[in-house]
Image (cartoon, protein in one colour):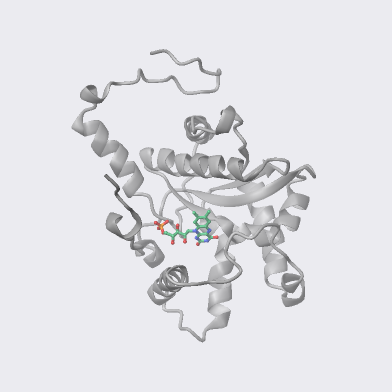
Length: 250
Ligand SMILES: Cc1cc2nc3c(=O)[nH]c(=O)nc-3n(C[C@H](O)[C@H](O)[C@H](O)COP(=O)(O)O)c2cc1C
C-alpha cells in the first residue's frame, strides 16, 4: 500500500496485515510507549536538527478530524531556548509579576475531586520526596517548578501552539500529535517531558516568540537525553489497571 506523502514526511513502510506483524514489531512499539516517562533532568548532549525533523515528520502522521492537522511547533535550541527561559523565570521569580499572570485556558479543573486530586497529590509528593523537598519547603518547591522554564536542562525546547479559531476536537487531535512526538522520540533513544507549566506565561511566550495574535499556546515539551544520575528521573508513576477504567459489554 503506497500512501501519498508530502516531501517532508518519512517514507511510509508498507502497511503489514495483522498476520505479518512480528513479535519484534509488537515489542518495539510497546517498548517505545511504555518506556516513555516524564523526564525532568537532561544531559546537555545536543539533538541533531535532522533527528528533530524526523520526529516531527513521524508525529505529524497523527490522525486529525478531516485531516485538519492543527499542530504548530516552535523548536528552541541554544540562545533562543535560554532567552525564553530567562524571560519566564524573571516573571516567575517576581511575586508581583507572577500574581498578575493568568492561564489562557484551564488545563486543570477548577474544582478538584477524587480520584483525580489523589493522583495529582501522589505524583507531586512522590517527586518532591525523591528530591528531598518537604511539604513546608515552599522556596524549594518554587525553584523546582521553575526548572520547567529551562526545559529541565534539555537541549531542545518545543513550544506547541494552535490557531484560536479551532475547537475542542482539534485539541483532541493535538494530543495524539503530542503523544506521537514523545513515542517517536523514545524510538530514537530520546526522552521528553510535556509541560503545561508554560501556559501560565503565555503572554511572555507570545512576546518573546512573536507569536501571531491568532495563535495560542497549547503547552511546551523538553526533548533530549535523560540524565541517568538525576534522582528525579527515577520517578515511576502508577496507572489504574484496565478493569479500573473499562466497562466490557457483550
Ligand atoms: C499535557 C501535559 C502537561 C504536563 N505538564 C507538566 C509540567 O508542566 N511539568 C511537569 O513536570 N510535568 C508535566 N506533565 C507530566 C505529568 O506529570 C506526567 O505525565 C504524569 O505524572 C505521568 O507520569 P509519566 O509521564 O512519567 O508517565 C504533563 C503531562 C502532560 C500530558
